[in-house]
Length: 429
Image 1: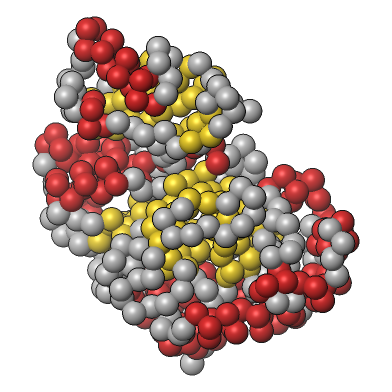
Image 2: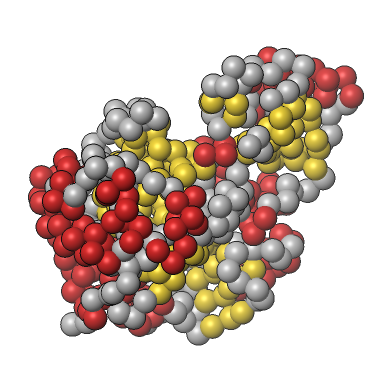
């Protein structure tokens, strides 16, 4: 049995562990991680010292909370001092994580072999939870592809361990019509796609019907999925979006439960905290900042790392798995809008109020300045000038920006960089 197969078998057991058992596992991994980075990473050593801490003071889960979180700017500023100087031989070879830069703060950092191993194991866990058939035909539409490619297998851990059916890869930047043409010819059973691109597909299917007759699984990757997209896909085709939550720096953070729709944290290799602005833990139903510790990256100290996302804490799941869940992932910091008094909030799309005037197919709200909010929308039939004026008034009043919301109509699909779709963007620095 390979090391990956052993880990997959262990994860099948530990997914049912109690939170106490998972905490014990986390602390056993935390102790060597802290000692290693305190000795080998100049950045982590200085972090501890600057806060009046020693390695021994943060060796427990309770002690770790004394260490202030850090973010992308600190990684950028640390440069070569961030990574560990020495890596255990068993954690080699090294890989590299590179963020997309969608927040304006791209980072590169090394990751050890075990971080990659857990990522691969969680890929299998995701497939197992949704009972995907490895012999099926897989279509993947992602930002990392530069051209249309077809292969005899899925590649990756699935093909290596179990064998698989054929696969097709399509670039995210390809025209939506061309993407659908390739998909119709290939007729996949499983589709992995950015939610932003899926929004364009749904708009086409609403216009002319669904042509992917063999499709059984639609898996989101890399984007925040909003409830309205789920509702539209369910209405047009009867499919549910199968989601997970990940980032380049640590891999899979949470996988959506097929039973409840909540997101289960990957406690076996990550400590995930959802924190208020004052650093205290949030409660069920509250939204907070996502802070992550990678327990197996000996190459870079991803220890209480604020990844720039917000999420809502969920209740204990009814499926029998224990531990922290997330109810919603709201997305990046820049999705928060700013009021004139400096307070921040998550704006609502008000799509149901807009439905009295137009049929909305896609939207995006951008705050260019405190007194300038642009509401981009793709609609089935353009509103009249009078309707548009009424819509802008209603949106401005509803969002707390009276007289400051302007609507821009797009004929087909709202352009998104690298296929990544964000429903709300604040451009105020």
